[in-house]
Amino acid sequence: MPYKDKNGKFCGFLNAEEKEGSGKFLRRYFLLDEKKSRLYYYKDNPGNLHADYSKTCGEIEIHFISRVSDARKLRPKVDNCFSITYAGRTIYLEAEDEDDLLGWIKALNDASKITVPVKNEDLGNGKKETKAGFTAEIAGGVVCKIPMKVSDEEPGSSDESPNESSGLSASTLPSYISGYCVKQGGMRKNWKRRYFVFSENGFQYYSSDRAKEPLRTLPKADIIDVRRSLSGHSSRDNLFEVVTAKRTFYIQCDDPADTDKWVNMMKQNLPTTQISLGQMERQFKTQSLRRPPTNSQEMAVTRVFPSKEWRPESPQRSSSQIDENQQKKRSWLLW
Image (cartoon, rainbow, N blue to C red; front, top):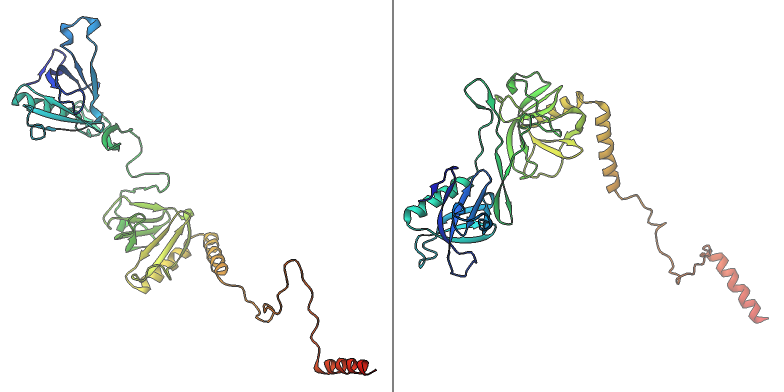
């Protein structure tokens, strides 16, 4: 069993395969320092060595340990073998007995476990202590623990779409119009039923009519246009669009009357300059897609000239003029 020294650190002797795949195990003294998040190993107990010879043979960062497991089935010829998966490589260690094996596996797993402490923990004297948790990220196939930055902002708030909570449920908020609709997601493109509220604060949607904090808020200044959706979703009807500079929100109502009610109410209570800009933009796009009218007679090809040469075509002559010219030619030849 690994024991704790006078400083409360787990330590003990293990046989380690320092070169992966070599099959050669060397006896090393391991010391688990949880405060520094390191697993050190020496040639012998550093307390028994001179200061010049007490240097470490190596160290392992606990944050980069992704797995500690029993490896007796993988290495059946090595008694009481367990493995440490670290930074994309596997280190095999041999314990003295089964109790020592299980003790080291538990100690290393507890030290490398991703834990998120509870924020604002009550200390018992009326004060609260704020602790930062960890986020897990994968770097090179290895799970890494990175301390989270503690922010004074409320969860869910952002500069792009501030979520302001008034403490009232969504159904009791003063609004121009509110009700349940189905919204298309921005990333997964799935459809979810949300409770929408359009008020002086902007266009908000909640998870339900009893929710007190909106999932997202679109200020009025960010809304460019509100219109019925005429294309893009053949399997959905009663759709209207809320257009912003970064995204177009597709929202489905229960019936056409409800759709018209939402569109008209939002247009009436949005600044007219924003709606006019949206209409001008939509009109410009539709006009740019149309082909300009052409006159087939003006565009008809009558003669093809060689490159870098062009001669204006003589005006068309009537049949009487052609007959006069032929008579002149005949008279000239007879003469």
